[in-house]
Image 1 (cartoon, each protein chain N blue to C red):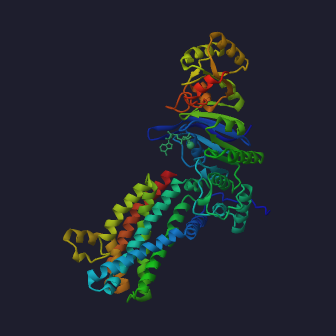
Image 2: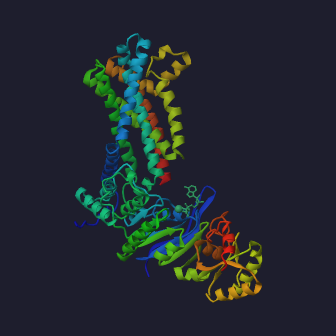
Length: 335
Length: 266
Ligand SMILES: Nc1ncnc2c1ncn2[C@@H]1O[C@H](COP(=O)(O)OP(=O)(O)OP(=O)(O)O)[C@@H](O)[C@H]1O
Ligand SMILES: [Mg+2]
C-alpha cells in the first residue's frame, strides 16, 4: 500500500508546552485518515506541520514522498488546507475569494472565474457567490472555505475539525462532500473530536492525546478495544449508587465509571443486559433507567488512557447527564 | 458547464512569479477597499475632520488668519494622515494572521513574500487616497500652494517615501502583536507624540526648549518641513536629506525585523 502522508516522530514545542510529542502516522493514498483527540491534543499542530505552515522541532514527514520542510513548495503544490477556523476574506465576496486563489495558482482570469463558478455550484453557494462573506452563515463559510482549499484540485486534503459548530444538516452535507472527494481519489486527513464523525468518514483512525498517538486502527478495531457499547444504569435512589456499581462490576468484569447519578461501563456482549437486570432485581436495587448506547470519544479515552478526554471535566461528561430532578420523576413512573 | 483545466503551478518560484503573486495579492487589498465603503468613508472622513478642526477651530487663534494657518497646516495634516494610514497596514496584517487567511496563502505554492508585498503595495493605494482627499478638500477651501502642481506632486512623493519606510514598523508590530488591543495601544503611544510633537501644527520655535528639541529630531518634522518647502516655498534640501536618512534608518531596522517575524510565523 502506498502512503500519501507519512509522519515519523514529530515533535513540536511551544515554549514549555509540548504540543507534539513524537507523533507518527500514515495516511494511505485515496483513503480518509481520521485524527481523533480532545481539545489541546495537538491535532491542529500536526496538521500545520503536515501543511508546511510550521517546521517540527524533531521528526520528519512526507506528503506524496516530498519532505514537508525541505520540499515544502512541492508539498504545497499537492495539498489543500481547510483550517479549524474558516480562512476566507470576509470583506470579499465568495466568488472573489475563489477567483483570487485561482489566480494565485496560475489560472488565467477567465479560467479562475470558471473554476470559482464550478466550486460555488458544487457547494451550493451560487446564489450567494456575489455576496460578501461577512453576510454568510457559519455553514456557508465552512463550505466556501472547503471550496477554497479545492481550487487547485489537491491530491491530499487536510480538514481540521471541519464540522465543529455546524448543525446536523450542514454536517451531513459536508460528510457527503468529503465522500465525493475520496471517490475522486483524494486522500483526506481529517481531525475531529467526534468519534461519530470519524466513524462515518474515516477508513483509519489515529487517536492522539497530549501530543502522543495512543491508538491506531480502523474504527471497528478501536471500538472493539473500548468494548462495542456502553451500559448506563441509573438507580431510583442515589444512595444505592455504590451498590449498583458493585453489581455492574461483577457482571461486566470491568471497573465501572461512577457519575453523579448513574453508573456506566463498556460491554462487549449485549447479553449482559438481562444479566444486569436479574442481578439488580435480586439485590433489590430499583432502576430508573437502563440503557445500552454507543461508546463516545470520552469513553474511548477512558478505555485507552484511563483518564477522561477533558482534563478537569466532569468524569462522566458524555453520559446523558441528567438534571438532578430527573431521578425523582422516574420514581413516580414505575419502570 | 465549462470544464476548467488543472492549474499549473510553477515547479519552483522565479522572481517573475514573486512579482505576479505579489501583484495578485495587491489586487486583493484593492478589491477589499472597493467592496468596503465603510473603509473609504473612514479614510475620507478623518482627513476631512482634521482639516475642518484645525483650519476653522484653531486657525484664527493660532495665526490671526485661518487662511494663513490653512496653508501652514495642510502639509502637516497630509503627513499626519498618511502616517496614521500606515497603522492600517499593521492592522490588516494582524487580522489576516488572526483569521487564518495567511495560513491559507502560506499553504499555497506561491512566493513566500506575496502576502507581505500585497499588504504593503495595496496600502500604498490607501495612502495615496488619503493624500488626495486632503488635497481636494484643501483646494475647495482655497489652498493654492505656490509650489504649484510640481511642488505638490513632489511633496506627495516625499510623504509616500516616508510612509513606505514607516509602514514596516507597523508590519513588524502587526506580525508580533498578540491582540488587536496591544497593536492599537502601540499605535496611540507611538503616533500621537510623533505626529503632534513636531512641526505639524505649530512651529517648534513656539515650544518650550525640551519639546522643541524633541520636535527638531522628530522625523515627522523633517518630512513636514520638506513638504512645506516643496509646496509653499522655503528650504528643502536640509529637511529632505533628514527625511531620507530617517526613512532609510527606519527601513534598515524594521524591514529585516518584519521579515524575520514573518518567517518566524511561517
Ligand atoms: N502558537 C502556539 N503557541 C503556544 N502554544 C500553542 C500554540 N499552538 C498550540 N499550542 C498549544 O499546543 C497544544 C496543542 O494545541 P493544538 O491546537 O494542536 O490542539 P488541538 O488538538 O487542535 O485542540 P483543539 O481541539 O482545541 O483545536 C495546546 O496545549 C495549545 O495550547
Ligand atoms: Mg485544533
